[in-house]
Image (tube, rainbow, N blue to C red; front, side):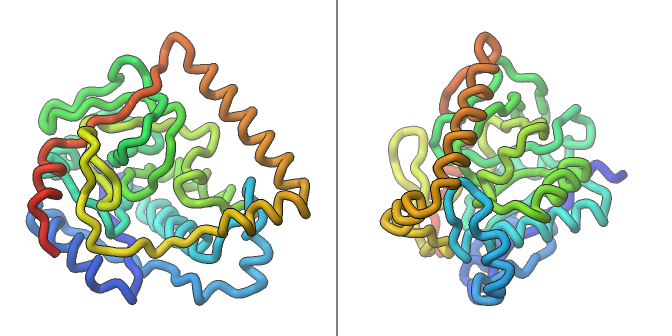
Length: 274
């Protein structure tokens, strides 16, 4: 198995502006990538949506399911190529440390998934770094509980197989799906990718040149479904209990905190032009 990550970029055919945005960054960093045409929500059949749309703790939208399907296609590619894959969504700003980190990745003892993204939300991570990447100056921490985000992560073939197995009969927003129990994850600090629509550590906000392509069910529709279909309540309760148990399991070894964004990302964002 080749241990140098390939780069797969998820991008909708109808979003050429986003493609230009991320391709420009990758080109400036000297990184080659393969574009994966994202699954468009309009192409999901009613039967497929009915089969998978209600398997999460709440109903998911067609665009959320389409996003997950796009990620499953990346995982399939990872398995077929039998090599780590850096998965990128097309609305992130990348750190200039990314090339060095990818170059030294093969020499690092990593986990099934390495998350390189941070978006300002607190995460449960190990108190101490478990892996150091000296060339890029990145520290890797065990990631126990994440608070969302699937815009930048490295997935290894074994993890991709496990994710694909679950995706046959279950669906969730892609970031929640990555929280699958039993898959070991690490978090990079500083974060090497940050979504455009999130703020920095100093409370500032990154520029927003694009509208999100992901829509969620309205709060009213969620409430209506929870009332009409009590099994969602049971799933949410079970999910919250499992998450609470996972958090309690980090007592003494983990800490809840924000992950620093690479300073060059914030500097780049403040001067970015699309």
